[in-house]
Length: 143
Image (cartoon, rainbow, N blue to C red):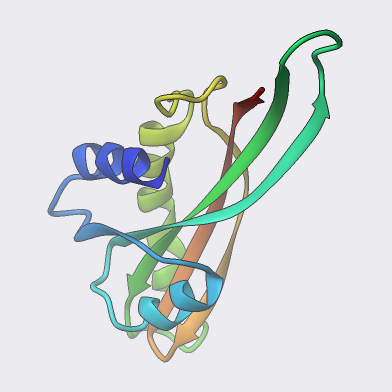
């Protein structure tokens, strides 16, 4: 799934606005890496999975799984004390990210991507990251 999202974002998020797209293992790696990447980099990471009940009564196994992933947007700007330039820069980045993901169906998944939420956080002096959580679903099947 992450490779599909990476390919989608690499195709949709163009320069000069975006600097690139990377994958991180988890929130700690995302935070550590965010202070070292260029302004306008998107960082994808797996977030969580939540499974529903197995719904086949007779033969087989099928379970619907909600899959969440996060995309962080790195913004570098050394501006006012409260970071107003970084905060306003998030708007343009969010808009193009949302166009790329909202309603898109990850190959092998059931439902289109939906935005769950987002929040910003400072990483280091002059660097902030805005992270959006996205959701889709897939089926887990078995014998």
